[in-house]
Image (cartoon, rainbow, N blue to C red):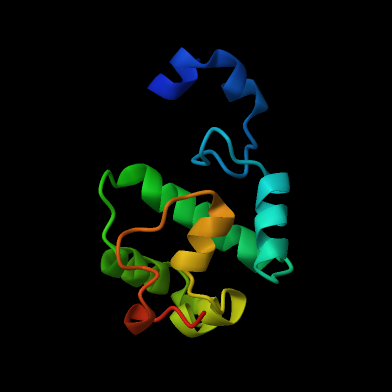
Length: 120
């Protein structure tokens, strides 16, 4: 049974979707993420993949995401691992801006602003 309108409209995509990334954009795959990460100078680990999945889930639930709210949501979700400090070690270019590029998402407005916390 289809779980979303996207699955109804594109039944073949539902069969191909990576079950670990149910909220991924239609044109996204682990291979595209690996390529994006490599271009960013990142080597993907389990922690990176968990962050990618969290970004994709958050963005799928928010029509017009706010960079600050996403930043705070990531801090809360990964609090047990060290929160933003941990995420900035994974994504030195900023967990929102750089993380969204790897996740195949458009970063919210302002996420790439150096004053917001992006260090690249």
